[in-house]
Image (cartoon, rainbow, N blue to C red; front, side, top):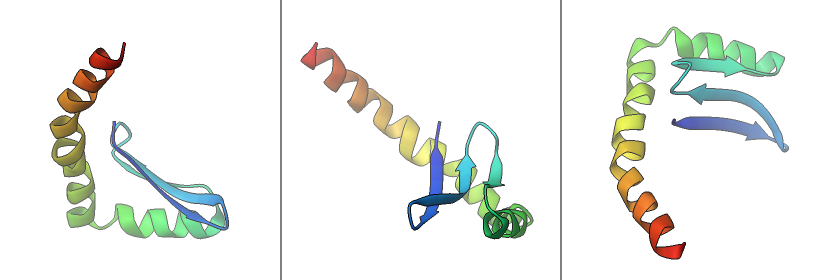
Length: 70
């Protein structure tokens, strides 16, 4: 799962989760940003692609590191 969170003053105001497939806002400011970003189709496509770009390419490396340490 790919998660990208945005924080200000240690307060999370938005989060993108690849399992949900969209941005979710947690504050008034975050809700406005999430609505704006969710209406931007190229941005949503790019964020959904990050799971394949980052997570799927690194899972084997992380898995092998865990096996060698145990």
